[in-house]
Image (cartoon, rainbow, N blue to C red):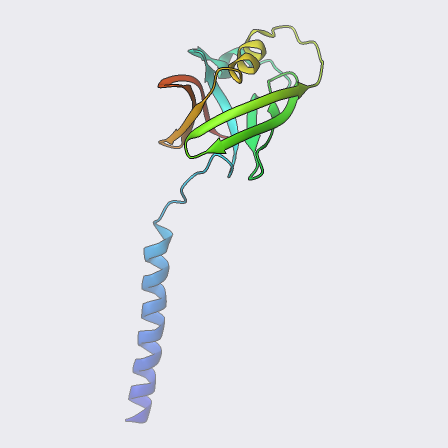
Length: 143
């Protein structure tokens, strides 16, 4: 009888661990503006993935939990600060390298957008940087 109870307890223990693991494995981690490196896919209604195909680097954005901003504009690297409160964001002045690339139109639009952006939202795995309700730039997670 003791063996039966012991085996039953072992079976229940392993069954409950498996159920707990399966239940948690289906949950998604909620993205945060500071949790990932973002890849620019459009800026001011321009598809940047096609336009920056020949650029040395993809256009990216990374913001750490202290508000330090860094990334690539496709040609040059940039850095600066951002203030984040709730769904509002304000970018400070940016510093950047001074490389010359053949087509700098996307880079110019991307870097100028930082002056307009005052809000953000993360929806369907994408980061939208906005001015009021208008989307200025859209990013996806960098892979």
